[in-house]
Figure 1 (cartoon, helix red, strand yellow):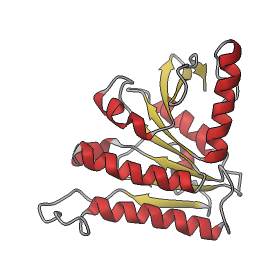
Figure 2: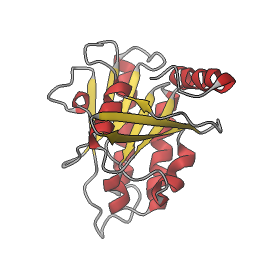
Figure 3: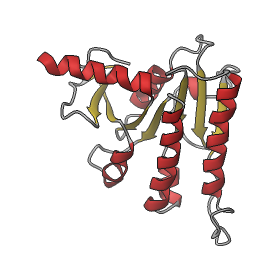
Length: 217
């Protein structure tokens, strides 16, 4: 994570301290940016960290046809410390009872995966757990926004309770309605974009009015 956020004066120090706090206490970050697949992959790699780091545990949430995660999220390239939770099947008319709803089952699987990882690690250290959710588009396409909001509230609390760092890909513009709806659930929103061969990021922290400059990834 960037320790120099690209803001001026005292804001720079406050911004950097906030980023370190998110890493230490646990955080959930929404990654946005339309038509920026390469940039999504780059920041995913940055947030997940080097695959050679065997002391880090990774949880990947993904489904078929999703392409925004980095190579580190692909099970074929990941190590034994990587766990995968699949997106639920599309809802059917019969999925009316919460206990039988695929999204409810998915939420339970997500929590169970974090508990399993915590047990495997004999207690997770801060930032030892890294979570990638790729992407939120299938959920928003298949379920109503209120249901998705409740699910993400559950997952984000679970990540934070484990002092992990979770990031969620949503490849739409920063001012999209879905971003405005989900923003309260996240500690930061990171815009990504591609300019020629350059990939860039811009941070918006939930508890800080300051926005970083566009920084190269």
